[in-house]
Image 1 (cartoon, rainbow, N blue to C red):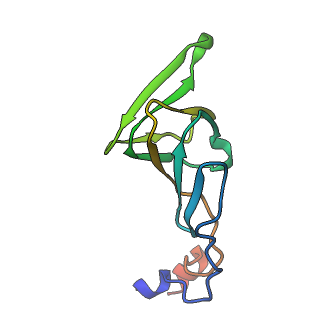
Image 2 (cartoon, rainbow, N blue to C red):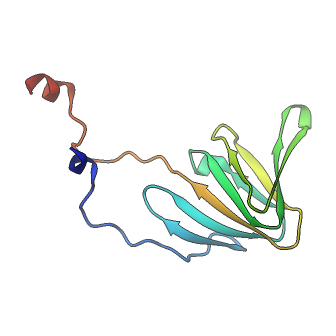
Image 3 (cartoon, one colour):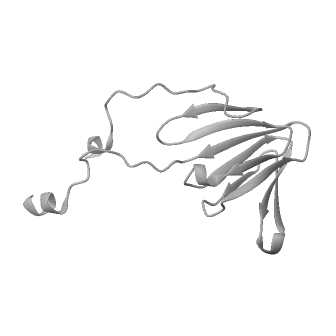
Length: 130
């Protein structure tokens, strides 16, 4: 049943509005995903290893470049403008966000991997008994 997958326990307080780095504000932080608003005024280095998942960027205004160091010291450059989004795969270890316009505003969304405690997944033994 659907109720087997809903956690009705007490939730920890969300840390919305907390600063993450200069020019960035965490809008929501919950077990499902994290959304951060980034006012991009200078290049920033993003290390994906801290997330353990893909990172999605939505450009709300301005224009930004996602620069990924490739093989033989080459740089792969991906631009996103207002209204566009870009997904950076989890396999990318790190990259740079570089502003291409003065009023660049991004939303960064990360889905973190979490092992959920609980007995909502039946063991093989439980399935055989029922």
